[in-house]
Length: 346
Length: 270
Ligand SMILES: Cc1ncc(C[n+]2csc(CCOP(=O)(O)OP(=O)(O)O)c2C)c(N)n1
Image (cartoon, rainbow over all chains, first blue to last red; front, side):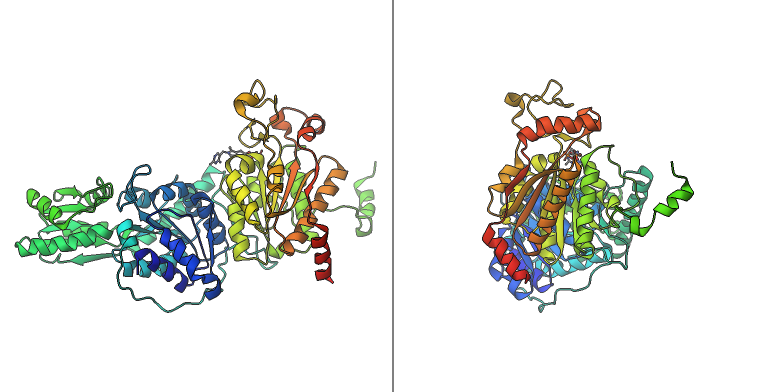
């Protein structure tokens, strides 16, 4: 099935309570699939086509505030529209899943795949000091698997999680193993607004604290949570790094491209390896730092003008040269191009 | 004058004619003296208490003067982004259809930045109550022009009075949503006299009943004053409201459920 369809089916099977979205290419199949699959009859899951991305993300806020497993999906321009809501969700510490099937930009850009929303996804995106948990699938299988993972992490940390995919993986068809249907949870988190009973204080979902000292304390608590996420949740995959002299760092579609580059390079006797971050936040700084000492150079391969490369440089901290290579605007990088670029730097 | 001792004789349960709703917290209201927000909070709390709905109520407060509504009402409440309360409430009600869900929004919130969410929630006929405080001005941010500001009315961003050629006409959201098939009850009320307060409270009570029966969106506009924003005393502001706001925003019901619906409800109740 398509990557987008895998997300939709996985959401139903993960026991999601609701999906709210607005059509945009290249991810409309998520909403279309959910509407056709009639999950309301299967599990009671609510699926609603909202009047805008702004409405959709605020529906997510409302549903998440009730302690429910809720999600939305969109592509770059729509994700930009959602940013105020995402910031509110982060500030109010609500768990939810946001899927971004990235297309090239800025502006209306193109409907073709890109990785140019990295900064927006991992550095905050909306206003204020906050982080999303960001997962980067590189296959249709991971599109499906990361739905449940994202929900689990979101609830574990009471933090919004994002699947940062792109149009290539969203549209790509691959074989996928789907997990069996899970029951929708009946557990109600203690903080959820479900009606104030006599047994507890009222629950309030808000990101507001007008007292600067109290707001600062709130932000410090958020920071503590982010440090905990950084300690516990870094995920990455390594391919042929043990004997590598040249390290490629790439996620999602670019990581798929780089796997082919590795084969081409090895055939020519060039010892290239790949580190594929699976979590973009938290980023595998430590691992890249320790790998850097064995490498001659490192290339960050991204379908953007070079965004993740800044984090790679932070990790490497000047130990070895770090470069960026990649096509943009919807152009998918060719494995041969990566190899050619690598050779110019060796 | 009674002494404190003497008062003790009078303060007895059997002499009680009024008490604060148990759903109003002890936190002092942040509203300016004479403002309609406080009274509207009170009647909402009273209806929810009288209907025994507290355990099943989720409120959604806006960005505006009433952003801190959750400090004053002892209910589960979500604070929504500016204008988005109807979207937030949509999800709450869809996920928990058995709960009573209401939004509480100012005119900047509901009729400017949140126009889309308001119209679409009403058009979908979401089973929620929208309480709309129309004070013709942006209170919280210091008295700027709202979409509802009357022609010629001065505000900090229309210092020479609203020029409708340049700034557009005051927007009648209530008339707009009354046209939508999704709304079942649309009414315009006020809370500036005891009689008006009683009527407004009755309207909220009706809306609770309609929501229980899943009849669609209930929309209650409360035409209100803003003594600080209008730069008037509370008494002056109420007089000005009666003379000017009511002329344009005519109090009364704009839409009530058809007789047959009401009959059907009564039968269901029996
Ligand atoms: C996105 C966004 N834009 C603007 C504001 C600033 N703002 C806060 S309250 C408000 C107007 C509120 O006026 P109204 O809705 O009429 O409510 P009132 O304060 O009069 O009760 C504005 C513009 C904001 N908080 N968020």
